[in-house]
Length: 313
Image: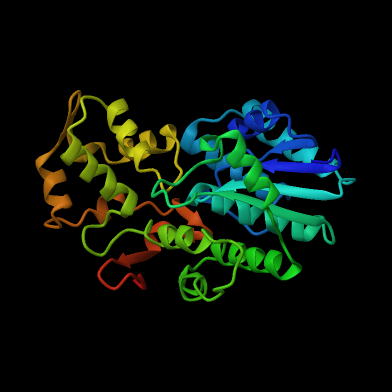
């Protein structure tokens, strides 16, 4: 583990864990959540960050100071690091991480052309059915992941960049057509993550997307005693990689489908929506809500055919 390595990690927990294991090299923590809110292809540009701040401020009440201190300062530090012989990316299997990963690779393609770039990606370990985050791995496992890291070719990086371009486009239909094509991709979790992304468009059946339906289903089946307990249950099945604030935000958007949050109780209307007796699309529609570069409510996901439909009127 040479000192000329630059590690770009998926979050502070991973950075702190690797440092505690005395991985040498320098560290940059990618502090973004590009799976939510509008994104544009020009990662790192002034307009890109302006866009991201507007979303984080409006959706999560993030102050300008916090955005600068937490995200922009770390990004500027990345811009200044140009002398490493290898850049190692540390990301995980879930949607949250995979979208951040392809954005970082798009930036690297543009600003670090010709550098040796490699990838450590956690998920499956041995025959275990559990999917592992990086901090779930013990010292031997994470050392093994590092030793077996994948060196990315120019074609691999170009592929990730292309998926990012499609993710940021104003229509997800090309992404839907293309994302499964490259069967020999080193990004073994990217196709499943993109598949989950496409299910975040509202369903034809009841107007709720996969995440929103999961929230109602979990509330109905687990009967948690509070909103925090409901969030805790959702975090247990977290293939999306969302944090507690993301789930809490989604729950709040569905509050009219709950009759109580202490304990959790779904309203009569909520049960009807869950049973596909009522379509809730019109109540949730928001023209300022984006998934990547696409307006969330301009497309519907048809679950039975696993296919997207464009709304033309």
